Image (cartoon, rainbow, N blue to C red; front, side, top):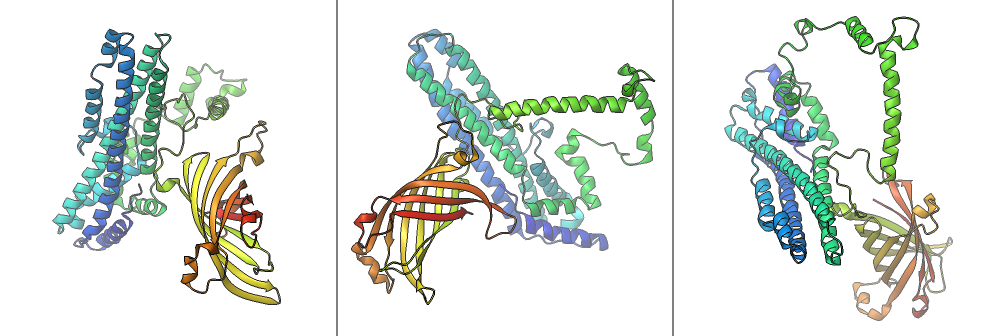
Length: 504
């Protein structure tokens, strides 16, 4: 979610600068700008509630199935450990959905800089009486927006508590099942699904937090401009969540604030005494140099640990509440639908034949990522004719086509670890093409005029510079395909197809 209240803040910034020139200036803020902020916040709020309910319902069903299976072996233990499963998960859902905008920020869990900046901006605008004093309705709407932002933060805190509970619950069930031997295979199946749901819910919450911490560039620029205004900087330093975590004294930045503080020489002398460093005859006598040496050694050890985590497939930037999956996770599962759509284009040129001129097929495609190694796509193509030769150039519309495709990541069977094998994909697809000059739309009605293709082959994917935007990197593609139905078309279409393209 990106908080696109850019126009709102730009309008207010102009007023703030005008305020410095005239104390009586008042800004009229259009309500539709505030509504756009509400829409963005409410969208993520609804997604969080909907996804939480979805995963809790699934987890409740899996736990009830586990309880039923274990009751056949040890009914008393099953009743003791599981209890009223449905009621427990309904309680978790109600707690999240009952979150309000009033709560203690100091206990709100993870600090999110992006959300804190938005909350601080809204609170400043709402309370700046000399800016919006004559627009009570706008001030009320700003208050509602701030309350919704606080509610979202409260919900994220509750979601974090649910995440921690589910991880401890998963460990508790694992320890319980380990006490028994010869359990039915269905138990492993249900517990496996339980583990997957716990992991994907954790990933879902993590993705929401990342979105909140990643406002667009223009919003960041506007917030930085707001911070140059003395009244906003003072307000933010006192009332933001960051300020509540690290409060500043009233005299901060003045000479009186330095009164009683130790000098650098005093600190170095104290460090030398505490570290038991000799005063002469040793290169480590300088406490700063000694600490720097120790920090370099610590950084080396951290680098080794990070390399080990990367080898295990764990991102070094992960949080302490990370759940280690017992399966290979699908990184696409927690992404929104549109984020799993990959748009692209490709080109295919064929030389002139007795029947056709030189042609170029231009296709636009959209592929849906089922997982990290499987994609399903559709596309539409248009064929342009260029004439028979350089001496006979004639631009014409030579047909259109419709495509479906599927791609699978090619496995590295021989464990070569090469970049070439890592970028190979198996490609298969079916196509329906009209390969005649289009004189009117009526020609499409005759199905016999359409040629059919069943293609299979390999696609090489690589990084390349975008042809449309300088400095942007995109994924280039080069496909070599065989058409199993080329001989059934009259006249015969090419048996081998070569295409190049890129993704948007």
